[in-house]
Image 1 (spheres, helix red, strand yellow):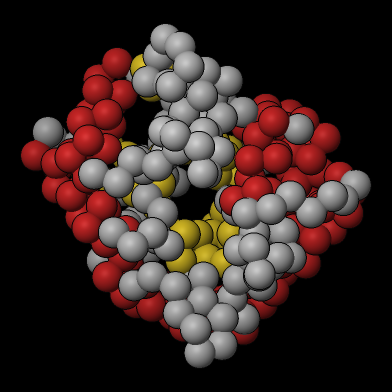
Image 2 (cartoon, rainbow, N blue to C red):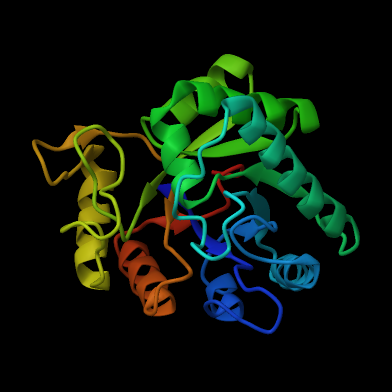
Length: 253
């Protein structure tokens, strides 16, 4: 079996740094680069894009609510059409900086509260899908498996790939357990790898509030902003490779 490993990177701002992008880029196949909403600035974008290109890692835009103080983990109430324009502006910023590297931005993955909102709100998901298609019909969307984001992307004719999370708990709705609630985070790489191996064999994802649910996935996300992110990514990748899994960017899987 082949699958992609992705992480959220370029999430610093000015002199402040979040995570170890260089180490993560040695482990992942795809990098979701923050583009000025929840984090990042032009120089941070450029640095992350250049490093990803040098390491042969595919890059995507990682737009979020304009909320650096909350790291994009709070919903900012906005009409769906305004969310579409906000997402378009952030994608455009990353694509412009990427031209200077040069490297191609291949996909879009909404961040944090925006991603979770789009996962459950079809109007928001449709607004994001429409913006992505109008910007460049070659852009794909990387969506949380089994959610409105997938449905809207397919309906809009946008290429869509589905992801599961190595380090997050699931609800029976297919959405992630909200941060701060019991079961939201998986911090042990061994436990995360065991769950992933079981999922890859069965297609069933354990949830905290019921029986395992059926999901599909072309990519696995490991969050780059957690304290143990590099150890988690390294441990998960090593265990899956030992089970015969190979890794490649999801457009190549």
